[in-house]
Image 1 (cartoon, one colour):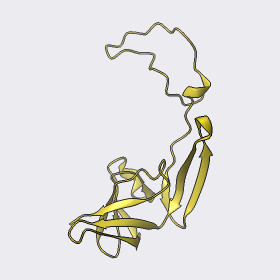
Image 2 (spheres, helix red, strand yellow):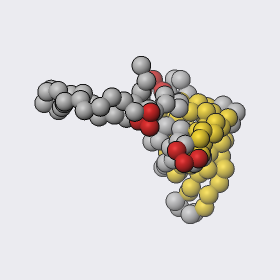
Image 3 (cartoon, one colour):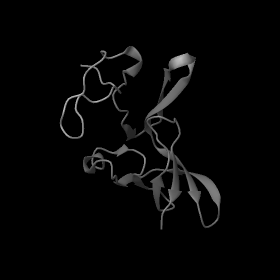
Image 4 (cartoon, one colour):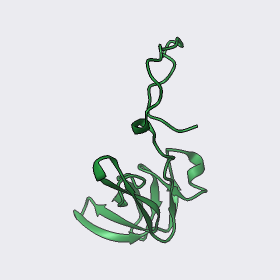
Length: 126
């Protein structure tokens, strides 16, 4: 069964909505892109209106912003420390927005959406 962005069949109260149409092709969404730690691999997808979207399948370098010095730098990711999206993502080395990774400079919180944006950016955490 296809994943879709169509409205739920149930209301918050538990009642059912009257279905006025079936699923549409433009409502279909793909499976989640789980960005892993490893050599950089990027997948380019075609969107509506010939727009393109890049998804990072795996990466090992992150663009880090240091708030004290107000400078950016490229850092190599050692490991994933924590991930609030799913506690099992840490042991599977999966990065999402809000995940904390360990670099040479210290802990970095990911601020971009690697599965949708195509770049991995973060901010240095104390």
